[in-house]
Amino acid sequence: MKLNKVVVCQIANEQYGIPVENVISIEKMSAPTVIPQMPDYMVGVVRIRGELVPVLDTMKILYNQSFQESDKTRMIVVITEDISVALIVDDAKEIIDIPSESIKQVNMLAYRQTPYFIGVASLPERLITLVEPNQLFESLEGVKAIKEHIQSQQ
Image (cartoon, rainbow, N blue to C red; front, side):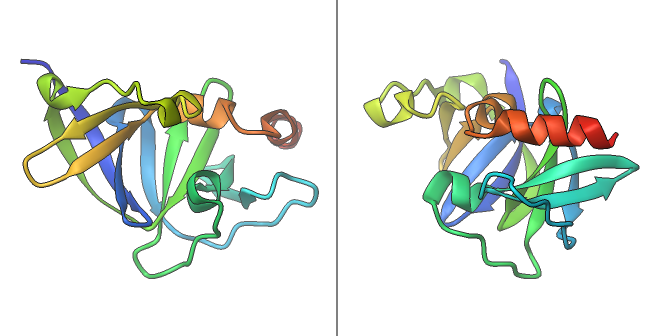
């Protein structure tokens, strides 16, 4: 039986899973440095282990609302093709194994507009939407500006 290890995070009232191989670290929220003229979902940049990392508001990306910071707010730092990015989530508390047979492929119309949702894990107690962070980042408007800014600062 193939198991898929994912970091489970909470965004709004939904649970999302990010494949563990895409995750570099989970960090406490720190105040990002604001960069002018960046897309509205990018709240700024932070330095993590010497690397400049853009901080993205996943509430804004998924629900078009700004995140509300609490003491549980975390940044999940993920690898994308060109740079690392930090995704702000309401909570990130566990890494779980999801058996492949619990994962349903998504083919509803709504998901076609969101190719970064790669499946839904249907577990006894809950549903977890699986997210491919590279596709999520690449699908955003204004990605090029973010990459150029980060690469010019390294």
